Amino acid sequence: MSHCLIVELSEEPIDIDERVTAYEFEDDDDIQYAADYVQDLDEYGRTYEEAVEDFLGELGDVVTYDKGDNSITFNDIEKYFEEDFNKVKDMVANVTMEKFINGSWVYDLKNHICDRFGTYIYHTGECSYPLAEFIRDYARNGSKFYIGGICDYHC
Image 1 (cartoon, rainbow, N blue to C red):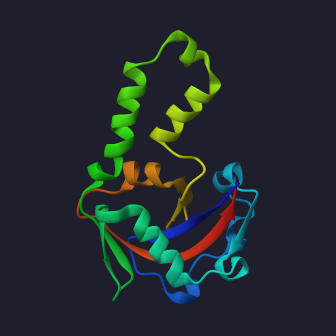
Image 2 (image 1 turned 90 degrees about the vertical axis):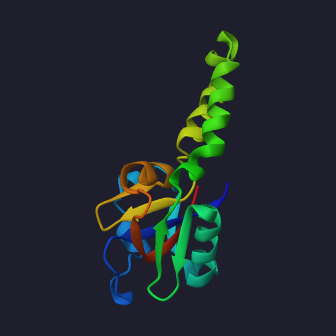
């Protein structure tokens, strides 16, 4: 399968010594649903900076990054959902009973709504959410979040 990120985000700055590590996910049911295992970045041969760049690349123009305080500010959350929204509209508009019954069509539809095997957000020590779910529930244009620990998981 593949390797994905778990990114810790908080409304308050996170001290380097307080960042989440793979150990915290041993009993996290949200992550265990998707992950075969969770590991710290160095165990996977990646640096923190590389992981931040990958995360920012996934978000694109949806956020602005402030390297000085290691934070992101959401500036266009609709843009994050635009492509998947259009795909879902097209899929539903063209669905037949045969497609609707087909498990792979349903799987594709669900993944365009919320990818359960992509980046997860560990939000301020509470819960882990797929990225799209986190954005829907917590992000608003102008919302600022500080990046904490980042782990790798295999799915």
